[in-house]
Image (cartoon, rainbow, N blue to C red):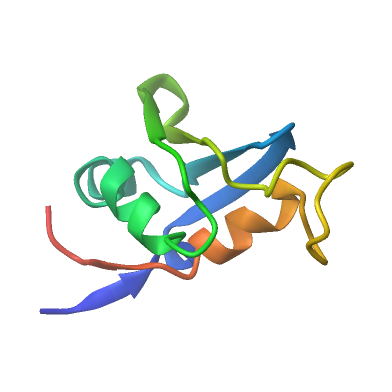
Length: 106
């Protein structure tokens, strides 16, 4: 089965507020959105960030934008102003998620 990285079919944006990270994944073309819906689940995102995400992951579908939005709870070690991590903000997390592999099937 052929696999691709999300970066091949999607763009991403991310940010943070406190100890939560927000990641948006936007399909580059309408035909890619069903792949995102099927294969980029909250459970897969949680597993992808297993070392960082210690809380729940919520997924929100935005079909009119061909996008998925993920809210990762308890992910930033308290947040940018209190964490001792080198990078305790969510702005780089979309780059990490775009490297996730998914099957190329609908």
